[in-house]
Length: 219
Length: 239
Image (cartoon, rainbow over all chains, first blue to last red; front, side, top):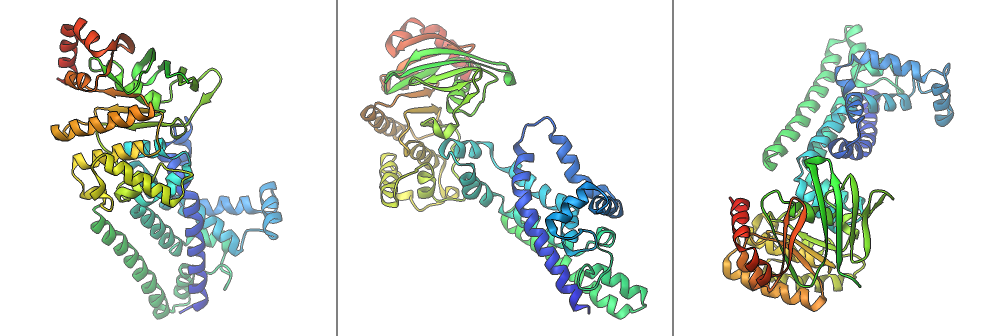
């Protein structure tokens, strides 16, 4: 099995999941309770990766990351190198591609909280951060777990976006799903089988974790 | 310091319009009125749970809401305690954590003492370590009252919080609450359908209809002069 690809994939998935949780908690809260007229626009943009072919998203991200345009040049200055065909580029692409898998469970979680509990917290605590940490996050914990597991496993299994943005550079952008593709191309079916089995087991265990906890929590 | 209350607001959602201007004499002012008269809306506007589209709310000489100038005081900064008919404790915290949630700037010892006093006041000291899921409806309501009073609010809003509570316990809690409010000169606005409670608490009565005050004064005066009308309205409200 491609040890380098395993390490790279798990590093990518861990980093992506952490970034996604940091983004999705405030975004999910806003989508649940925000009243802006343009909220449907944000909802549609967040959900876009669910329906868009990964190659389309990957293509546009690749164009955006190109040093030939202003956005790409600005990002190159921040990271010190172009994002295309780099690990940092993969992280950016994965965060965008897996965004709905983290945001949507959390939005559902925040929406499921009794409105009167929210109001009681607002009457007693002036700090929104305190309300979030002490009341809301504990109440959406099962949804937080679902968001984390879905974001992680979806990133692990990503193919189209990774290939478009990162190509296939060993140790830099070659993830497990790209590795399986390579092994099949080389007729190394036994190796491909081992790698595929690893991904299959991981995905199944992740879902088992979600449904097991949901069953116990009655969610 | 004036206990003057002025609410003059409009809100598109629910076609809400309130014009209430009065003095609050501690401890009790019982709000009567037919269903949809604006009683609960008045409490929610005062508590900051409804943000009106237009208008002004002034309490104790302090402007809480003034849409023209963009003034908006957040609910927790209004020093108002609010207890509704349905007790909504934080399900992830035990009773002690629930009651201490609104306490700021107190050290742990003072906070613990305050929580203990509040729980004793509402005969709930033995519930301190219990989780909300393990409490009966009446116990939850007593904890909700303790939680609302713990930060020592300057106004208490009660929206039928004793519904479904054992009658003897209700009498006992009303007595304790009256003593607590009187000792601190804190007024309470209390939505109720129970005329007897107005007499029991020696309250002022405020009759509201269509968002405006129809009558306001001592219970025996208002209830005597408007007895027939009130009974009819309360029948509609509870029906």
